[in-house]
Image 1 (cartoon, helix red, strand yellow):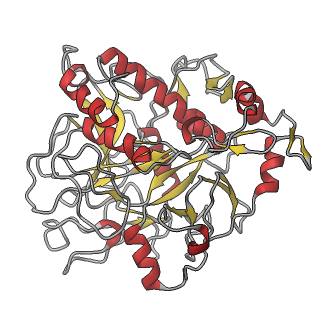
Image 2: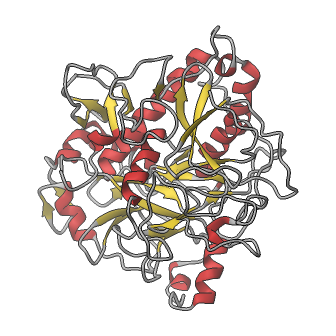
Length: 480
């Protein structure tokens, strides 16, 4: 356990949604299923389609929209791709960029019209412009720097992380991200798919999913070893509870679990450590299913702000140019606030959560060697993308989105349109370490470490060593 008093801020990455499940189609309606939500005008055919969800993923179902018969879900979706940069979508759909790469755009979100934000390989950005109609958004001048700066300071933004659901040596693959819990060191690689509406490893006949983590110990060990086998209660792993050496601390404490249920408005799954373990596992399985069906997830573009310690119903933000956030919170409170984000925004097309360690690792893979603002390559295992010394910003955290404090050095902690992975504050994840820790990633303005660095922190640690009047920042995490 590494507990550094000098690190005064822990970021939160919220997976705000590994975002989307795409998909079940009735005669008239394309719907998002699973983690991503459902279209409001779904027909009764949804129930039948849900029973055959594994066929949808395999493309073995015939769809008739009244005018044309399609032989597979992919064929149907290909006919529906009409989204252009700058468009707001009312229903979840697919977007094809100029490189013919595809991402899922959840209902209610707007595809960025900014040059450099419209392709998957460069970091596709979507905006939640929820107070304007599609017609109003169509009048936005995305080439006007002042207009764009105001959008970035006002509306939540997320970046798409592509994950293939078929083996591809040239792309990130779902089996590089997840394993099943039946996997042992000797019985080979997993083959994750979706069957009967659930994520499943067909190699080991298991529906209990886990993270394939890109380290075996904390520190700067990214890709120097892999957690290939899930072992509950020990080492790096997820999903799992942490209950202390005697099994009576942290996730076994009713007052800490109650802080989750109070924010979420339900005690179901958050009343005992056993039920919390079940809830974490069910959530994890759904995320794996979503990533498989959607072939990707979303991560918040900026570190999360706006978490008010005394307000359980506050809606957190992923916007540029603020330090207004949270100065004192446990892992439990942050976990619940991230999970509550989608409901607080009245989003039915997505669900939100604190970022997984497995998802954070895939973000690292996606951004490695991407271009920094100074046009040099971004190296995830080397610090230096943001100032870490007193003359560079040690005594004053940066604002979100690289808007620097006066007198600090040039801010280069941006890659593929994602900000603040190394600077500002660290990122809490759902990953467990040993019996008493949750894994935090990256670096803060008071410690010099790389974007991929792993620390561990006691989940009830409230960050009481705050030295600044401005509250802490917490990184969003991701959209699913």
